[in-house]
Image (cartoon, rainbow over all chains, first blue to last red; front, side):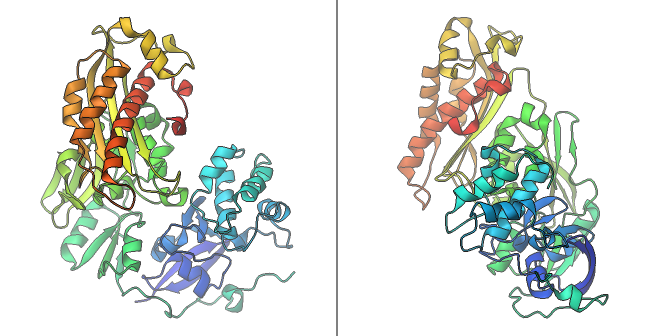
Length: 157
Length: 348
């Protein structure tokens, strides 16, 4: 039985008809066609589907869709400025070569953003802890941590 | 660069709809009660219903088709369910997430074993939604927060069609995956009693990798220490960065005694268990590292681990010895020294 919900996606209000069995990830990818958010394992192990809900990083593959009512969701598509300029974290990932196959990248960036929004200047230890739930099967973690470090300490992102 | 085009632009202003292709889960109704009473009533009146709090386990089970409920009753919108209160010690609501526990300074100071454990569950994304009560209700032998709650003498609060109940956590666990919850009964929170002065607690989790892993063995301890029957005055007396073994060897003549102790072990039995013989052997004794080694041997005899993909039984038993000693030392350290001088977690 379909239900109507209202929530904010990347700053814009959105009214959408959903089925209670959907996850937030399904709504984002299959209905809203915001395919920057990836589905890896679907069990909350890999973090490829990480998005930010009300300031907190969460696995969208495990998020029941009806809980999104009235909340604000930020996805990787919401980071770029309207004029196309990349978010500092995105630019840092490009500069440091932190993207290999790219599948984990959106999740990594969303986890990093949630971390930096909460703790402006995280230590290397805190960065590693912050992205511990994001798997990179290319194992390019060193560049990823380096990229996040260049943004850490530059203030709120 | 092209701005990203998505469905919202194509259907500007109108209600966005989607099809169900690719949805593999059988249909269910989703309920969002706003009070505990309403939630319990829903559970009682609906057939094949299930509570869902953070959903990090329920959503996985749904997807694996291990459960097929007709109704999900969400606990996320219950008023006051995520409250943390400080009456008579500590009251933790059933909707409190693991990261809310990690971020709570009071808990970090007074009940650090629980913070140790909560910080080690899954990933940040998981901890942002997963609840303490969910970790306990699953009753996995490997539940990280179970051991700390056992050593902190946690009382479980439940509400059901028959009314409210309170029972010790030790009695709440019935076996692997089984807890003492009747039909339609809901775990509504925990009460952690106020602890005596000079009490320290700690939890150590032994894993193959640092994050996103279940424990091979998890051990928690709580100790209350006295000097010749008196309270220890100022912690700053022990303001040193020396390691705890050296501190203890210097304190040998001080008549430092273990007044009260609790030890709990995870993944060594079908449910998290207390090491009661080891506790009895430690109670009232003068502290020394040698004594802790003896206690660790006793704890190992109380453990009944089994072989699994995460570790073999003999190895787990050996690790029980190592970790029991370590966790007691860490708890003692937390009594003796200001928190910022205690070595970071991973060095234990």
